[in-house]
Image 1 (cartoon, rainbow, N blue to C red):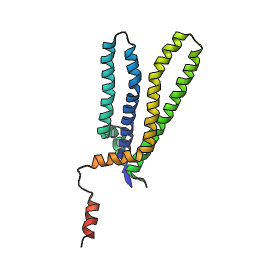
Image 2 (spheres, one colour):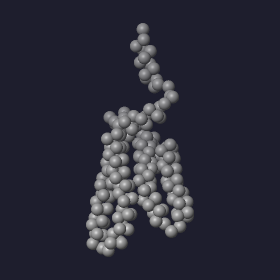
Image 3 (cartoon, rainbow, N blue to C red):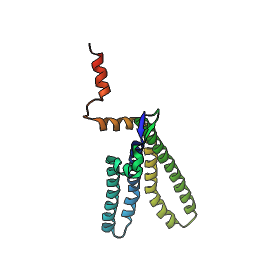
Image 4 (cartoon, rainbow, N blue to C red):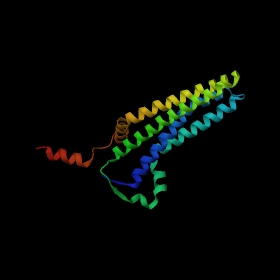
Length: 187
């Protein structure tokens, strides 16, 4: 398959958009726990909605318009053509698998961190342990969600790639090569 640096960078930008969206979604339980423990929840609530909305908006813009950032990053090199036995769907599949494995391992490391923090705090006073345990419940939900999303991405990357391709090509006419081969097969 022939591809360009521009198309590879578009895949990387979309991968980054997915990373931003999932990391923001995973941080939501911890933010809600902090909101509940806040002294001034109204100000914190507005700031949280603003920040989380901005991050989700950034992720959506990068997902919908990856070419803007890809063109800025590649410049004139975006016209270079690469020969590869992999087509764009396979490159996207590999990228989503790598992202899924990253999330899974990041979540496992987060579980280890929470466990070690709880073990160290158990030796301290009971109020400090109780406060930290309440905070770590929200962190635990986020870390488990990260592991589940990571495993889902790693094992479901092929289906997600196909879904994105079908969504992108919905309503478009079939490729000219398919139309020509159908007409050649007709008597």
